[in-house]
Length: 128
Image (cartoon, rainbow, N blue to C red; front, side, top):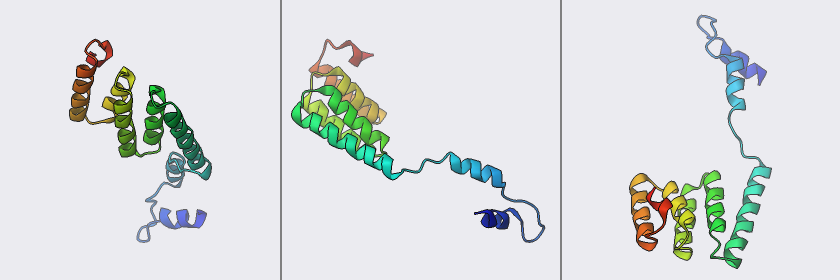
């Protein structure tokens, strides 16, 4: 690693530094690399939340948590799919509808919130 930084740090024509080795290493420390433990934790969370959804499908926090795990894992499309399924299974949960609106684009969120308002006309959070 040291040799490659030394090689990169000197310009072949003028000998001037073109790459700051300390800045390069500092920028590397800011990048997140998924370790096997992180991947294992996500898989365990998925399995646990699937069990929650299967045993108690009307439990809205299970749908929200499952969608957030997928979002945290970088699988936004899967998170959107899960939370929309949660909207179908738990149509009287304001929180599921609000989470769905948060995960979707602004135009789609308007449509989702309109459907929620039709389903629950007295739900104050939907209108805020």
